[in-house]
Length: 602
Image 1 (cartoon, rainbow, N blue to C red):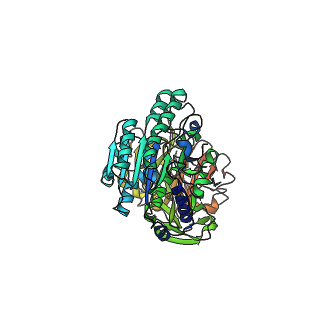
Image 2 (image 1 turned 180 degrees about the horizontal axis):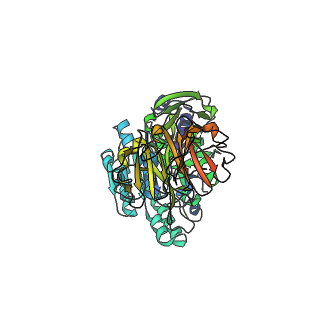
Image 3 (image 1 turned 90 degrees about the horizontal axis):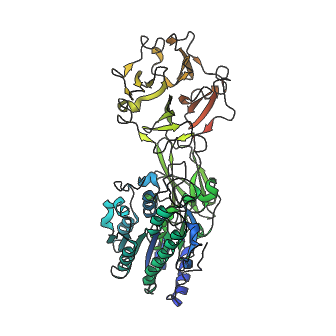
């Protein structure tokens, strides 16, 4: 990596010493109030963020980049944390929106490069202007969709331009610095990515990096002239690239690897890697996250971080908040901190605990269901992580000659399509359960309690009010005349238990099993089309080895293949059950997470 001691630009001279002293004092400050007192020096704080589209970190050291060489550049990551609600494609659209909002896809909602989308989260421009109307903002971009994603927020950008070319972008950036007197300037340069897509890695790509470095130097030269201002200069890229250099978009180490550079020494979040519980992608999550740009900008501008913003990362400058906030398991938070202060933990903006920062973890035993956002506040900085605590309420096997899928329905009125062959949720899910996605089922999504596939290409959905629907899997719609009430006429022997069904499963087209909310089960003969004699009976470790201890915790079941089926429990765990040995597989229940059923609860 190329390093810089600290903004070695010729014009700073003695001012550099003053800035260094001021910054070191700021980094020791414990509160935003102290920050404001320290900045009563008459020196205006400003920020320049330059984004280089598609520039691979490893290629910088192979090229001539005298201007980038003056910065401290560190490895960082994009794409969120794979297999969690924060996961997003390593594409320009979601990445630039993350850079400019400080949050991942699960909050900002921009999934790809389609410019018809718009951010659900406030941009750094809006956060700045709403916090201090006296500050002036500017954004000059080559790739126009960046502004399209924020089309409802352009009023918070005092000067904005979609230049149509990197040379024009450089001129626009210089104009914003000198003529608009902007306090925050965002610049986007695109040519490196364009060359990568057309030529991959090689001589042309390296030359594009050198050209971009020269353009960056011309912009910085204008900042150098402003010796009475304290500029934080940051550089960042939106995504890495696959090994050939042509493409990107997936969750691989090369595509997730980006960089962040600064003209400041930064705090430990910038300078020191941390080993985290999630060691995927060679431990990349211990590096700087792409979400750190916004809090760094705001902190340098002395704008207090609000917990309601739910920014995902602490700032890279100034006081250090908790680092690397993530879920260690389904209900346990992890963070890194050596601070002697306390951390305030908020669930959906409501304070639930105050604990020592050095504790590094917290288990939420009263989380409740639904989408949860945990925000941890320390030293005026925040770190956030999202958790989907919805329950699996029904599973429907959809195995045929073409598809090897299972559909899971959740208590948040969403469903996912699970690829059994690849053992993960298909891309793009979850979707809303409605009449567009499941024709005729949408009106009853709040009532679904169980489902299974019958032997005649029909799916049966059982409702908690004692009715059921028959779903035609060939026509992909509910059959006419449904829902209808469960009676001893259409389900002989099942009527007395129609309101008690919590799970159902087809057992190799021979028997169907219904599991009741009181810990009993019913065996239904498919050939005789009626409940077998002697049922219901209690679930025990004698008749269901390994399931008996969890008999009142079952929320759903799904047939998987000729060997296994799965049972889902109230505490977001599941049991893998071997139909051949008629016993639970050793080591279960296991938590539903991205190491077991990837993407199921995101």
